[in-house]
Length: 232
Image (cartoon, rainbow, N blue to C red; front, side):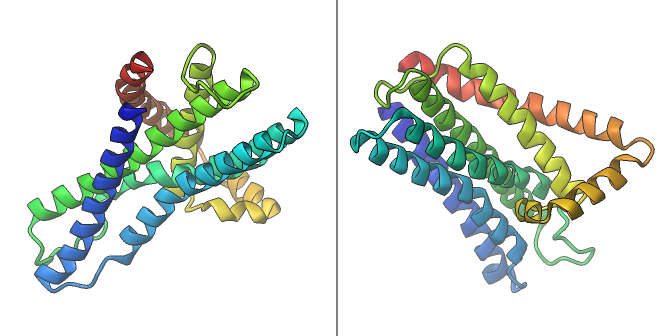
């Protein structure tokens, strides 16, 4: 648990540092606060909030000694909401396009490099920790209990699938400008999606985008998850 707490503390510090740089950028160089960055940080943290709330409900259901189906219903409902929001965490990678800079920007490039890199790393960190915690919860539910949480066996397959879906979510957000809440209008969502992928080259583009992002997230995930699993 000490290792997990250190990881969570590190993620919190990285998020705080990223936000501080966005605010300092405006204060020091007398430019407007780039609000989309702050919004993206908030959205990046949303999956963790949903995951924490879901876990709290799971603990409550377990303590009330309700039928196992109740535990799984809470897990499925919370898991679906969490999965829909999770691409918002990794989406911070796309801040590396420096779209907030102007040709005559008074902010030094070195400052924006550190700031956008901090945002991207915070998003990756948020994503990895979210998947790691979800993987542990999946393991616990699979074994009909919420004690002795760890990562093992086929839960790694679950993690790989989640990272692939996250990469596809990033693609939808960056290239089609979809948001998680666009799914409340499924007909419009599907119509735009089909129209996009009917264009020549879009399927290949999406496949390449998802493959590279999944590999990147997978390597970073393994760097954190494997040592933690060994410690547990």
